[in-house]
Amino acid sequence: MTQALATASVFTRLSNEPGRALVSLRSQHLVIDSPPTLGGPNEAANPVEWLLAALSSCCVLVCETAAKEMGIELHAISVTAAGDFDPRGVCGEPFDPRFQAFRLRLALSGPDSAQRAQLVQAFRTRCPVYTTLA
Image (cartoon, rainbow, N blue to C red; front, side, top):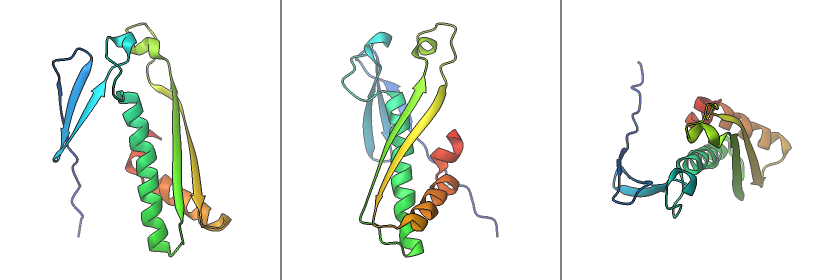
């Protein structure tokens, strides 16, 4: 039996504030701002930061689920995500705006070395955000 694909969906529109977008997903709402270099108010996270937030939070949740499935005792988990891109491309200059590199720092409390490796492998193979960006 073939499993049906899951579909995630969001709706985004401009607000009355220049450089600000309003996002609706399920019953949640987010404000996303542009940085000042793009004419935004810079009072909320920007799309680049939300992408990194999606990556790091997906890592936390996949590792939590995998740890439960594998019977690994997990006391705490935290992830720091960073990425390098050339902002000149976003501003319309002839530079590639794509991320050139991502860095994740995963801190796990509880698992031993072998178990940490299992959780990292689970993240690398099961996280839809990571596998898409990779």
